[in-house]
Length: 57
Image: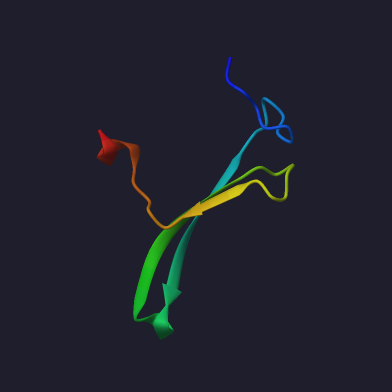
């Protein structure tokens, strides 16, 4: 059995959102992925390293 943090319920659902972010007045852009727990305001992760599962195999 793996330990659970004290403020995290064992079976919370997560939501995800993909973003296409443009910076430097449109000269550069990148993709980002956000994974969040809708019930806990401080439980989120955002990454600018986005890979599909197919590319990781």
